[in-house]
Amino acid sequence: MCGAEFSTRSNRTNRFCSSTCYNKRLSEHDKICKNCGITFRPKAKSAGLFCSKACYFEDCGKRQKEKFAKLREGKPQKESLEEKRARMKAVSEEKKSINTIRRRHEIAVRLNLFRIHKNVKKVSELLSEKTNTTRWFLRDSPAYLRYIDGHNSWRARELLYGMTSKKYRLESHFCEDLHRIIQAAGYPATREKTIDGKTDRRIDLVAAHIFGTYGIEAKNTNKAQKADQCLGQAVIKCHVMGYIPVCAFPSDCMPDAVFMHVARDMGVRIVNELTICNELFGGVET
Image (cartoon, rainbow, N blue to C red; front, side, top):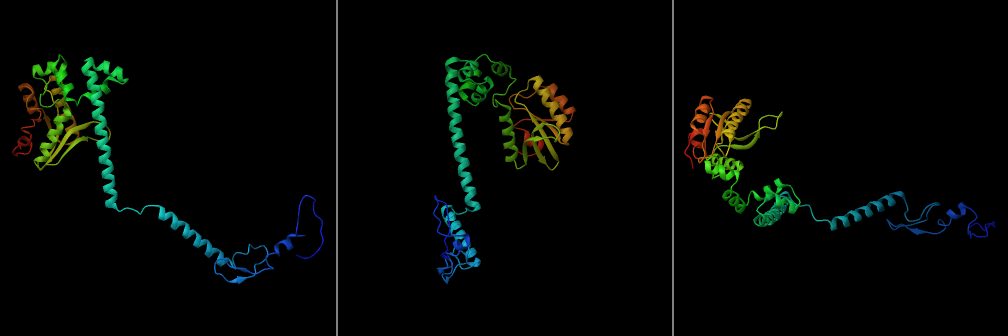
């Protein structure tokens, strides 16, 4: 650059005597700006790509836009709210179908083992699970229910004495039927309503009417202990919430006359799935 002689180390090859001469190497030649395309002579300590800072920042902005454009091309367009709801509904239905098939398979496995061994505990041991879990899977199987009803079990004895409903095996099935009947009559009803925020106690069914709100406690058996429990729960829970207490029993296992008399004296109404609309709303049962 300057033509001066200088010394350097034997293991290095230096072509410039100083950093000043090194930086002047670019300023000796004209360059073309990468952004605007004009010819310019770069300054010392410059890379010589742009004629000014404005061109440098403008070029950076262009490169960023191109980068984001390429990223957007690879991504799908944002779906609308209706499309998202339809997609989520399809996914939910698919999961529900898969879970239904899986549950039927699990019930079938346990039912076949139960037919062989005739013992729920033995089936649970073979599957390495709790006995209550095995019963939970088998409780919705008609074949299992027919088997235990036909053998000497506690339910068979209660059915023999007329203490348990033949129409509703589970209390939840009875509550669901009452809920359906009330809604079919045109009255709002709510299942499993919490009585307050300080406890986990819940009322089986709450139905609203112009005369007031009914708190319904349901049992699928008229066994003395269960019936008394139903009466006490209806009185206590409805007193807390200010509802009209109601006890519901299936039509094929209504409580005895003593229970009915005491319930009327306490102001508790006794209904079943056939008389609930007439007793509570004065309508015709459908």
